[in-house]
Amino acid sequence: MKLQVESFGSETEWARGIADRWQERLTANPALRHCLAAGLTPVRIYAEMIRRVREGSARFGDARIFLLDEYGGLAPDDPGRCANMLRRFLVDHLDLPPSAFFTPSVDAPDLDAACREYDATIGGGFDLVLLGIGTNGHVGMNEPGTPVDIDTHRAGLHVETVTSSARYMNHDRFPTWGLTIGLRPLLAAREVWLLATGAAKAGIVARLLAEEAHSDLPASWFRDHPNARLFLDRAAAGDVLA
Ligand code: F6R
Image 1 (cartoon, rainbow, N blue to C red):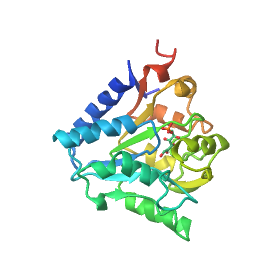
Image 2: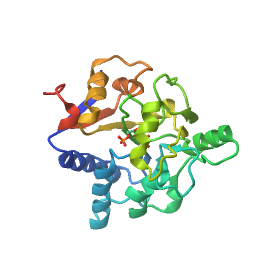
Image 3: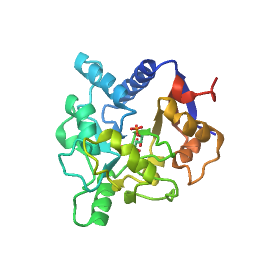
Image 4: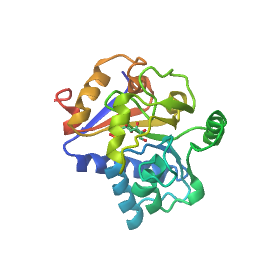
């Protein structure tokens, strides 16, 4: 396994440690092309980056941010939409020009065309990808069973993922599908950071560290990525790194 594992004593240290590395990457390459997850795991890291932009130690003025995935069937202004979460938790508070934030067109009449268009916009790929891990091992909306060589596509969500989306919604019309960047461009990224915090993720983290790469555990493909890191807090690391 090439995946490098870093574990922190608390979620606060975890967020600061990751933000330190992110700030370094931005300093080295101000035009960094990011692919960023919504969801709750990265929120503390995003808050830390906002703080650094405000104090002038980090800047996103020349960067690009591509949203990892988006739910279908929700109103454009639904606070549970991934783009709205990422705007609220990060993008709206950065020095990033609005035209440098890219999202897949989940409301388009022709979703296949919308996916191909997003792939074309992604073009040369990502310098840095931040991924949360679902409790069933999904990354983005690449659920167990997703082919490893897939580009942006329409994905059906597993029951566990639908239930889990309740944490983001202020209603109970939970999304059952979405558009997601596929495993192929994610695995082609120059650097990938897998993120997990909290005891609820300890089980999937233990599996990720124990099992060979296979399609029933999409996050496991990153075990063999040449430049991937798994960042854990103490609770997500569980017993495996003790
Ligand atoms: C969000 C996304 C999802 C989440 C994953 C973990 O854009 O793509 O794959 O990263 O479900 O969700 P949280 O972080 O809320 O536990």
